Length: 164
Image (tube, rainbow, N blue to C red; front, top):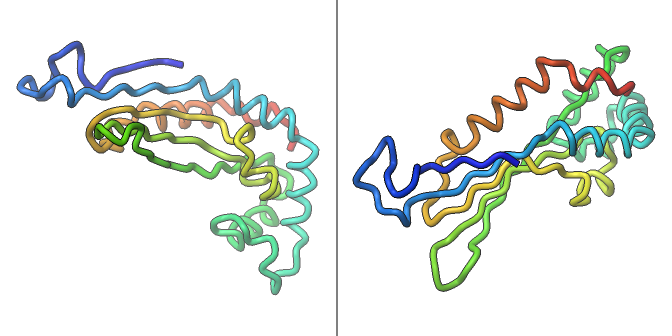
């Protein structure tokens, strides 16, 4: 995990008058490693579910448990020879302690081509980043580095090393 703070020490570069309680801790993961583990461990299920989605009857909603299911099905039919790996990005926040305003936000991903009962298991949802602070997260500030890393993973064709 890499770690960065919205505030350096007790002084923010952007707002020098800010109090230390307004500092937040942001931790980004090395996403390639856990994603490789999930895909490697689940390759057979990914291939089976891909075939199931591709050949599903269009009148049935059974395979539309994923966002934009119909669009995904059309994309799979159009590019059935390509190794595409789609991710569903999730954000979730929780208060850590009742007596303070300390909050934790988690950004994780799941592989869309896994069946729902397998996709939703925590060990199949690699962590992208966490935000811990007393203030609401600034999503642009928090996730810019994380999403930049995702773009690099895509750009480097890391996913092509898996035969999906």
